Image 1 (tube, one colour):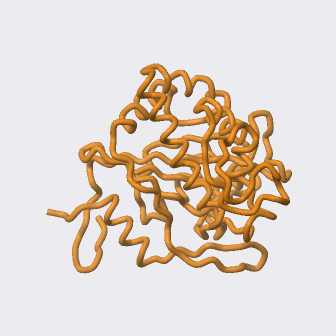
Image 2: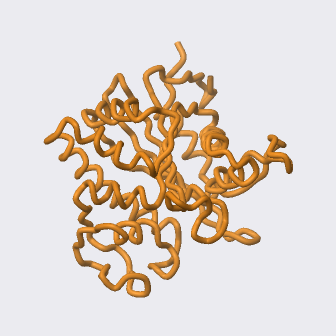
Length: 283
């Protein structure tokens, strides 16, 4: 139970949560392109209200400062440390060399950030997995939001482009030398891209009842989950028929830390969001 503004709240019974982690590595790499262990550079939480038939996607800033699981030299849990949310996965992977432990560390960090909201399932997708999914959808058409001239001259600001292959990856992943190089600006591009990708996938699934399962099988080598492919297909099929709410992101402030950029959430706004999406008044 949570106590909020003079009232007690209990978790809503019919809300299922899925955490999607976009990993900064390809299928064949155990480390990211920067040489460090893979970070979860992209984090999206789906709050699926089975009773209302509604899915609320919540974008989580990878720079959000949270308490992440720490480990001793033997890979055993050893307290916590304050760090960026993206490092929860990377830190656990580095010390345990265990994919499941890394995913669980990310799940726990997100749950802790959201005042204990239970995360029911997780899904990971690598960089090349996104390219495969993008091209299975036939590409995603967007209006280029930022200046990519120093990264990819084919992505001209203001033009409408159907993103294919590495173009799609560069558009949603690149931060440095694009716009103001901030993660907040990149998250806006990701939100825009996800809207387009979602529309493409739903349209294809409407035309072919086998599309969802087939797509999951084709990206299976690029993903990980605590669910089977069949379970994910069933979940995706349910979501397809639900109302998809607009993407929302946590409010907060960007500050420069001792070494890296830090995003500090607005606790008051976060409490309100958690209560609205995951709780109901206690009887």
